[in-house]
Amino acid sequence: MSDKKVPCEIDLSSVMAFEMPLFQALRRLQQAGEVHAKRLARFGGLTPMQLMVLQVLASETRMTASVLSSRVSLTAATLSGLLDRLEEHGLLQRQRDDQDRRRQWLLISAAGRELIQQAPSLMPPEFNQRFAALADWERHSLTAALLRAAELCGEME
Image (cartoon, rainbow, N blue to C red):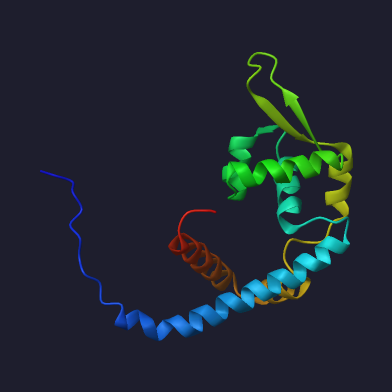
């Protein structure tokens, strides 16, 4: 039996009723993210993505760029520039593998560790307070819904 996908027609009219409220909700989330990103920039000039990369690196002894790329949902090209900037600021180090010179390990520097210990949360404090006040089931449900919405948006960058 063949595994070919059979194209089917989808009636989008039932979805259109959700378009405006979904877009408005996504826009509010985007605006809140932009405001918080400006707050983070005042702290050591970090973007939220740079802070997240440092936090992921701090949780591991060392990591390759390809593994890091998938962990932070960035393309290799975008991550490369971000890593260059973090290295220029002395917040991470690149180290060649002794056995395979083609492999490069990423390590957070002592300055990077110190910075993330003092850094604000990736999420705005108001959000964290309101989120913490939710019931456990609601936190899980909201997280699952946002992750699913991100999947519906498609591939990363």
